[in-house]
Image (spheres, rainbow, N blue to C red):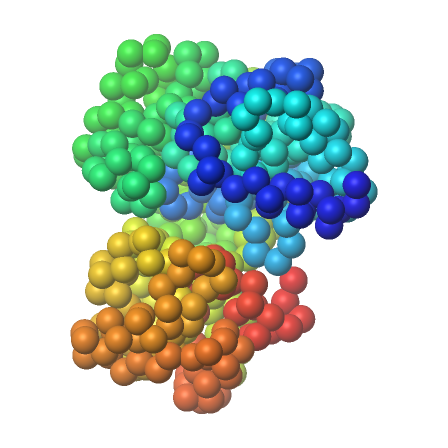
Amino acid sequence: MTGPEAIAYIHAHQWQRHAPGLHRMRALLQALGDPQKQLRFVHVAGTNGKGSTCACIASVLQAAGYRVGLNTSPYLLTFHERIRVDGELISDEALGELTEEVRSAAEPMAEHPTEFELITAVAFLHFLRSRCDLVVLEAGLGGEKDASNVIDAPEAAVITALGLDHTAQLGPTLTDIARAKAGILKPGTAAVSYGGCPEADAVIRQACRERGIPLREVDFSRLTVHALSLDGARFDFAPWRDLTLPLAGAYQVRNAATALTSLEVLADRGWRVPEAAVRRGLAAVRWPGRFEVLRRNPTVLLDGAHNAHGMAAAAESLERLFPGRKLTFVLGILADKDVERMLDRVVPLARRVYTIRPDSPRALPAEALADLLRRRGAEAVSCGSVGEAMDAAAAFAGPEGTVCALGSLYAAAAVRRAAAPEAR
């Protein structure tokens, strides 16, 4: 099986066809020799900030000399981004060979594994064959019934910022969301929580008490931001001083604080994480699509703010970096998101909005999105393609202006190509 053939096979098995649960994943992995039982994990769930937090943890652990697997979703430019070892994407050859192995185990099953379950199984095999010391594993949807949750107690279980998203699958309240995410908390692990949401925090604390799990909530009083720009941030997270993070966005330093708290927990459990590795690892973090600067003159930003919580974080960053300025937006949103709340954060900052339809059957049509914006008093123009929208937005903003592309990550790759073809 070639790499492209592997990707086509995996994508042919969408999760919507099956009820959630871990029975398929357990059966598949058992047929493959249970590779996950021979690996050690940091398991990360949450609504927003999962990917950035995972990237920070993995980068520091790699700087500390460990061989580190990283499994995240979704991808921006290439499917292979989902599975990495020491920052290197899985090769076409390895992807094809491992997917063939997984297919041989999956095809005889009475209920065929889903796309995400197949990807996760391939990732576990790749990490085992690559002899990873530690795997940073991002949960896909929720936590309790997510395919990633077949692992035994991880070295650390991390819950990032929580908000209302995927409510059709996880439940309509923050309590429901927290209960689903808390499913990754197993006896024998150590928990880290971003915190800051009382009703969700209560659920996580209770789960830890009931399961005898030590819990460390991120203490943001330790965080002092000295400088924040489009080039990143300089900050303290006591006792660490003068750390640098090359990720723009005010929310990224909070994700870094979550990662640092997780690394402290790992150190308490015997993992060696020297200060020099913390500094080198954070300074080396790269995470495209999250408040990413694609171009200058005009400044073009991309942020995958795909839900109301993420949009609020992006808006906060824009307000801090461009105080008092109106910006030009390119916006695409999925129809099953909290569109009203997302637009409430965009409209006050907008000079003009160019709307697009992300590459997803769940996407809100560009003209329908433009109409919602106009009802709120915003100047909105619907566009037939991402390229058309990006060209029009750049021309309208002018060389001294700022264009910010927000919304679904399903449009991120096209935005990057249109704004900066050389971006990788």
